[in-house]
Length: 126
Length: 219
Image (tube, rainbow over all chains, first blue to last red; front, top):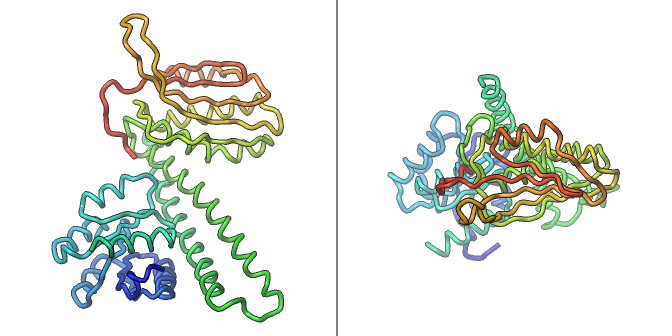
């Protein structure tokens, strides 16, 4: 792992509890501090209580859609980078996310190295 | 049309769920690999077989992921009705979705790499149906062990009327040992899509006119 990303606080927002907790575990093994939120409302609440360096946000969430969560995050914390996760094939969801202000998008299942590269480049670009 | 929309919508939803399941299997297997990489193999009888089992999980997850991604795209083609499609992408997708039919025939299929997009104006579902039918036509004539090469390219012909270049996009299906013929179904579906269906020795070539005005390709 790139040294620069060590200790990065990551908020994973995904309603698939098993997926999110396992990915959080894998990130923890690599020195990240990863927390999980199951939906948009609890993610926004968590962001109001704690400080994070990056949000990994699933597009298809129960209740508030990922793009709505993105918009709310951008309004409240404009400097906080958001990376969108999409289960849909093709770039359309990802492009919608980028238009909404996301820094990057990744397809599920996530390639851990790709995710680390994104975190590293976010850290480098500030 | 309502049936197609229904099928597309249900399939898109189900494949999305399957991708989540695959993602969980992938992450769980990968977590076990992470732990072994950090701490070494657990000392237990047959413990040396664990990495092999985890590697099999990883390989099959990748295989399932490829199929599910293509099936998800297929479902969205049925429910979204994009008017302009990327021929290169849909051809690659059909190559993956036809894997079972190819395997049953004892053949193999190779999709030649293509960089960039090839926008064509077509109903995505009909386009995929045409490409799938083309694969089946080639398979019908192919012998066991034959390799079918699926490739796409842009081409420019001079129009005899105007003398101006006439942009086209082509899909070629080539088999090494056969002389495939375009079936009636393939020919009529190609016509419906405004495409030409050409049979060459050992090949079927589908030729599509490119959209006159550059339009956004729905990803």
